[in-house]
Image (cartoon, rainbow, N blue to C red; front, side, top):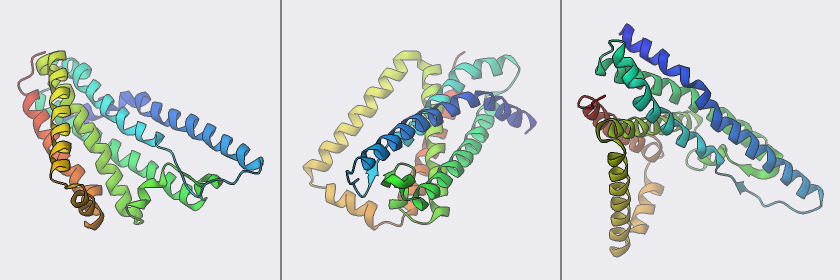
Length: 233
């Protein structure tokens, strides 16, 4: 257990990477708010809601961070005598902590944005998730689940690279693209998009927010650990 916690602490040395998307969000939203304030000052009425998707950059950076952790830190940790199970467990603990902290920050910003009517300009960046559920506890758990599943996907991709290098990553990307395209064609052919929409609308909010991300997390972690046990460094 001590080694697992030590690996988790080692992963926190990558904290500067976690700040990059927050810097991007601050710059983009700051510019967006300033522009909207100027437009309103010129007498132009602003739309009731203005969506900005820059917050999604956090999730991409999370996946990249944990992909780098597997490809760069894993060989180093092995050289220190850490086992594969200990390294994977420590990285998993770090991902869980990262998910909780990020979800707390995003939920707090969603509450602030909602309470100030989109920072006074009807902006919807952090609070867009409140369209799924107005329950802040559920939103917090859902955001934590999404961050953790992104970390799990990054870890899985990193283990694929360790096992098969660039060929493995290209092959995995191709298979995912083919599977997504095939699913879209099949659903369209069966005229199933209304049923897909009803599933997300009629299901309890906990299903798309928590259950589905956690299911993907389990699959990604299981696949990643299985590959890590056979990876050569």
